[in-house]
Amino acid sequence: MRSCLLSGAHCYLFCLWALLVPPVCLQHASHHRRKDHGGGGDDGGEGSGRDKPKPKLLLLSFDGFRWDYLNRVPTLNFDALKQEGVKVEVVENTYITKTFPDHYSLVTGLHAESHGIVANEMFDPVLNRSFSMETDSIYDPRWWEEGVPLWVTNQRAGGRSGAAMWPGSDVKIHGVYPTHYLPYNASVPFEARVEKLIQWFAAPDEEAVDFGVLYWEEPDESGHNLGPESSLMDVVIADIDEKLGFLRNELKKAGLYERLNLIVTSDHGMTQLFPEKIIELDQYVSRELYTWVDKSPVVALLPKEGRLEEVYSSLLDANPHLNVYKKEDIPEYFHYRHNDRIMPILLEAEEGWTIVQNRSGTFMLGNHGYNNTLPSMHPVFLARGPAFRQDYVKHSMHSVDLYPLMCHILALRPLPNNGSLANVQDLLSVGPSLAPFARPTSASTSNPPSGVTSSYSYAPAVGSLLGVLMVLGFLVVFVKRVTLKQLPALPMQSREMSQPLLQEDLHL
Ligand SMILES: *[C@@H]1O[C@H](CO)[C@@H](O)[C@H](O)[C@H]1NC(C)=O
Ligand SMILES: *[C@@H]1O[C@H](CO)[C@@H](O)[C@H](O)[C@H]1NC(C)=O
Ligand SMILES: *[C@@H]1O[C@H](CO)[C@@H](O)[C@H](O)[C@H]1NC(C)=O
Ligand SMILES: *[C@@H]1O[C@H](CO)[C@@H](O)[C@H](O)[C@H]1NC(C)=O
Ligand SMILES: *[C@@H]1O[C@H](CO)[C@@H](O)[C@H](O)[C@H]1NC(C)=O
Ligand SMILES: [Zn+2]
Picture 1 (cartoon, protein in one colour):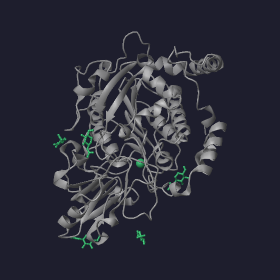
Picture 2 (cartoon, protein in one colour):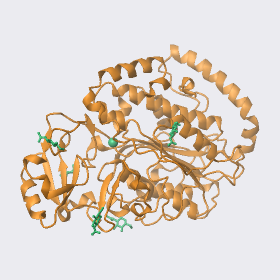
Picture 3 (cartoon, protein in one colour):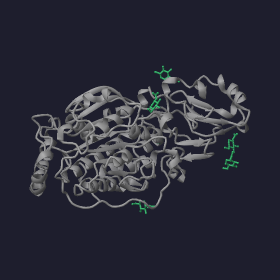
Picture 4 (cartoon, protein in one colour):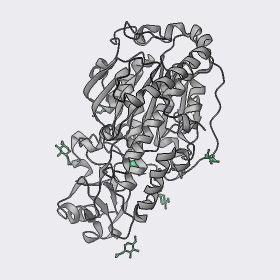
């Protein structure tokens, strides 16, 4: 599989992993492999003109990157982001904690009940249609248009957007695609996605994108297959850190690193499952009485005509590890009730438990979807760039607060949403009082803190000196690498020159 892209030691570990993972887990490997889809997408221009200091923002999601994965292995690139920027320790995401709902919340600032992508698998009784991330149904814009993703708002305001595989970003929503986008294809390597985005960001000013979204399928897929507590996950996490290193490095090479705002986060975390923690619905209620709409651990059931009470009462006290709600009784704090696509009955497994119809199906070792207050469901969050403070750790935020924050950085007027800029304004290097909705913005919203040298206002000079700096950079990094081998705990001093080129053997 991807092992050929990895360097020596990792390749070895991946091969070991491939040998060790029980076949029963591998059957789930297609869980998040959305169907490839041709067409769409265009190429950005070449070049590096950047005279006008317009704010730039790149939002990156590593699917299923649980917040505490950072504590498992050395993650030098994540550490560097924290030191150069901000980290939020607790990010409460939106319910249900699944890939499509949470990614759409990040770019709309809305709870799932308000943006309409209420699950990865849905049924809309008004449209009389089903949505599944495994099929082309996702390309029907009607599913997405209860919300307006930030790339659309950006373009309506005259901005330009670039999208690499973010859920929904290759769908024509409210009549528009992102200015540049890649049609979803899980086989396109991370490095290729990054190179496209950098091309779009680095294009001559009138063609350059100012907002980008980037999605990567790991560590979610491995988390499902291995279980998050498996020590084999350490290799996967280390690989993600290298991927982040590749992105940082490419941004530096393109002269974008100091002027671009980079947010690294995820949709949700992951929790360990146990083969003995199984809830079998067939033991309690006949399959004839309902349609199974969404999967464990939050199962949406559509009872057959006139059978609601029967299904409900059969399940209500059936299993102590199962919460059973009628739609109108779903707890208010989930904000998961007011939408036609939320089914009349919602089943919620206790953390670590799996709901099946019977035991004949496949079994995963990790999953997400549970209560969004559980720490295991929480994503990682770091950000750096001229808009952000440096070396600042914040305790908590809601994932829906990201949307007004991003609007602020891009100087866009946010649409009605469930987040709050006030909750997260302490992340910003400059308070949000300055000329909020004027576009194009001046440098006012993007000034780095004083005392920090930035290539931002010297962009043309940097352009001409780039070659020289790169040669110097490579030399310094080379020397540092040699030095760091003897002094592993040496703190990074110069943020521009001290990043090891962790990805050099990953260049394609
Ligand atoms: C809903 O669609 C199905 C086919 O997918 C069809 O059999 C059924 O009649 C439709 N129901 C209504 C109310 O239109
Ligand atoms: C998906 O990407 C892979 C790798 O770049 C490529 O070989 C394949 O043709 C692509 N599939 C489609 C449908 O575009
Ligand atoms: C479990 O369900 C499958 C259909 O999904 C069925 O074919 C199989 O016979 C069932 N097994 C048992 C033991 O009931
Ligand atoms: C979800 O978590 C909250 C806070 O921990 C808790 O009060 C609530 O009971 C949980 N809900 C369910 C359905 O488990
Ligand atoms: C979330 O925001 C939408 C749009 O403003 C609003 O309709 C909805 O009531 C909000 N939800 C909550 C729980 O406040
Ligand atoms: Zn997943």
